[in-house]
Each structure stands twice: as C-alpha cells, then as structure tokens.
Length: 108
Image 1 (cartoon, rainbow, N blue to C red):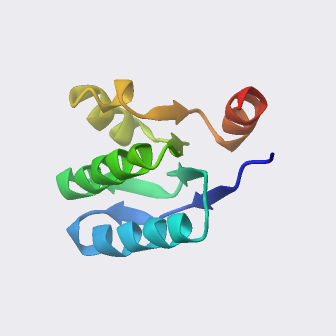
Image 2 (cartoon, rainbow, N blue to C red):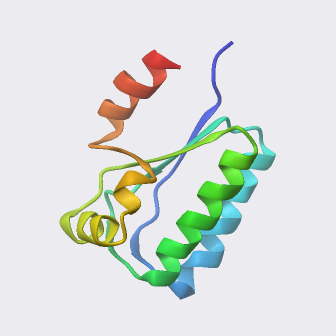
C-alpha cells in the first residue's frame, strides 16, 4: 500500500491573516485522502503565534485521524520559535524534502 503524501508550501509570513487559508488548504488535503501532509516552509520568512497555533491545531487533528503531519525546510527564525516553544520536540521536522523522502517514506 502506498501512502498518499501531499505537500503544502506556504509563502511569506504565516500569521493570523494567512492562518485560516492555510488551515483550509490542509483540511482539503485531508478530505482528498492524504495520509501524510508535508508542510514545506522553505519560502516562509516568519511565523507568529497564530501561525504556530494553527500548526498545532492541525497536528492534533491529523494525529487524531491516525495520519501524519511533517515539516521541512525551516529557516533560523522558525527553528528558534520551535525551540523556544519546545515544538521542535512535538513536530516531525526534516531538513528538506529529500531528507523527508529518504527517511519517512522508506520507513513507512
């Protein structure tokens, strides 16, 4: 059985103005049968508390469905936010898409 992996790649700042649109996009992916959602943050320059809160809400929902939410390609600002809030221990974070594919998809 192959896993349905869908990638979302937000751009710019993930804050309260973009959080709802982001959440809805992930919800649509779940409706379309995604087993794993990879959030590629390579084009994100900043995440505020509402953006982080949206990621946490989605993580809880996705785990409750026995599916996975993974994150890759975080910059230094996002890494610092994740470390300060201990979210680096909560989320599955990969260096980039290639690391995700070689680690997560070969293990699953």
